[in-house]
Image 1 (cartoon, rainbow, N blue to C red):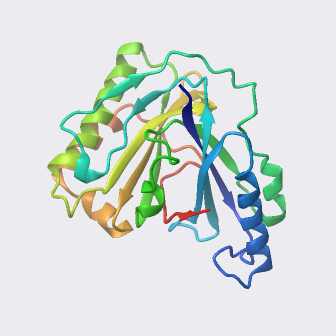
Image 2: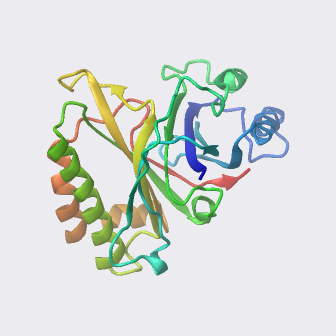
Length: 260
């Protein structure tokens, strides 16, 4: 059965690029790039939004079919339907990432990039469940927190399993044990599939594996207040023990997504 993978592209645009403004010619041109990719083979759904931390930074996310994906998936449930436990699924088929059929040509973004942009566009692929083609969660969230958690690629199998267990415990605590009005609206997570490892100077191997979370909140303030709760502090503690510093371009961000 075909699985779905999400491509997230982070890029900083010129102030004159305003896709949300119908009178912005450059903004309309960027929207046309977004719309054009909807005709790519395998495209399922897409959305875009500006980050709260930097209004010139845009996140473009696309859901693409991937019939040969390998991924460790943790299901994404709206809070109202969150189960008492999480079903974990392992997909065993191997992915040949030299096949670029499901990749987007980032050169199309060049005309819109900020001229003084020190950070080039960052693109990662991650398997989230359910895929964005099957849910409007990304665009229904008032704010979605995007968070990449890097760990040294040299961790043992037992250490990696413990991190997975800690992530599940963290999600369960915030989704089920924090009062509903104070907790997240939805929660998705998975591990970066492409590239499966990123450069990291603080890793003994020079490489890091990355867990990725997309968490829905009522507002940025709601997230910040949740971080002060006892459950959040208890849950994040074990994850931080072996966590590396954020990877440039993949620092935590808050985005209000719009459907394309």
